[in-house]
Image (tube, rainbow over all chains, first blue to last red; front, side, top):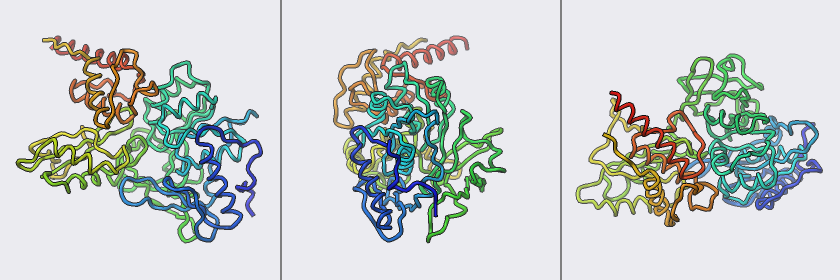
Length: 369
Length: 94
């Protein structure tokens, strides 16, 4: 029998504070009930936690822009496989929850706090980075895990002097060197690391050397039991913590991430499916483009990602109108067509052109320069 | 030839347009206006859009080497001012 903690044996010192505390408690209660009744616990961003079919496991949704979210099933044992408790000097940690509690990363933070007896600070559901950061500072958080976009939001909304954080963790988006350097300078006493994980493959590894990407040496000798390989520019992993398929470990998985070796590092350069990361949300420019192409008055359109240092990218749309189409009416039509999408997936800059520029092979180039 | 750009006015005008797109109104900006967490109807995506628009219009990018911290409208204007000055010096020297 496993020696891992069970949901009904949480650390007695664990507590949740903040405007989001009720939502977190509901998730914990669902995990306890799922274990007790040996049923899957289904966690969704758009509905309260509920119980599913037989067999205690945790069902999470993968993030995405279009189409229904795909479920990913994890055993609690696998989810806990990479947890690190507090820094270990005997003082209970105060963890700030910056991710959605039903996302993989959010659940990891909740479980970390619950099993190590930490205090978890949960801001109101849907709070933006500035509000979440303010809640963390107000409640004296000293352990914070967030996306690079969250951290930029923190640095831009909180005035120095910064709190003396003990743990600074990044995840969910590639961490760039400039941001890592900023965080090192802002929080000199903190253990600083960025984590690579996905809802399907589980927690893969953490990089703690202050440099972006990961050591190329890991391709020969992977960390934490993970095997890493590059095939056709794409990173493949074999992880002991990957999601269950028919009750078994998933084995060798493509990550969908394109990588490049630069000197002694492996650097993340984009997604194979062309999706881009916008403030932590994975967006498909092609899918958004298809919505616009379907509009009357649009002869052709190109939705591309314009890089920027705040959210990584924003979407831009270039539209070639049909003859006699009215530009203002088209702008309004684009607004209406994209209003149901998550904010990150709505084109922020819409321009009109007589034609679209294509790559030498005649394809639309979706990375705006 | 030097073209003088009123950076604070440009930043205010572009941000006002971005905020208006989502149906809100931007109050008057001062140099000390804090973009995030300062009570303005501005989030990270709005700010990201502003930077893309400014780069398109001014043709300089103070962030070409990555994120640089700025909190207020005045700090952002200063980042662009330095870049534009650098460009003028390059042009004058060539």
